[in-house]
Length: 106
Image (tube, rainbow, N blue to C red; front, side, top):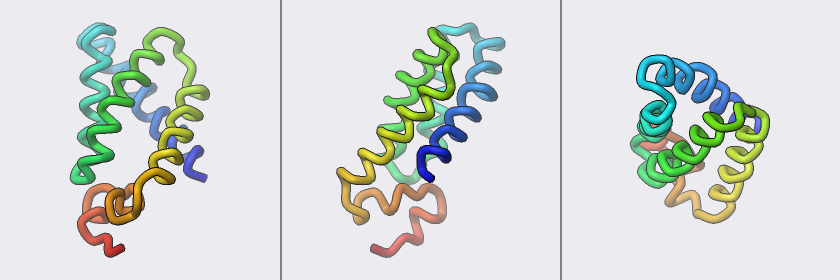
């Protein structure tokens, strides 16, 4: 189910935000602007925020070049599942963000 959620996140990021930033700022500046937005969406979970920023730079650049949401969604899902398997819940807080991150009790 997480892969479906990741595909939805990529759809919103690329089809909505990236394309609008590209129209406003040009394709070179749309990549970091969209990646910053993705990283900010994962605050206050700093591990997810930083990893989302880095992954967002890659994903947005790949979307700029190839325009393939399906592959990006699969890669996003695979990396998310890899992170969930690699870090304990005391660190990742079940990959929650916002108030869910702050209220999580492991």
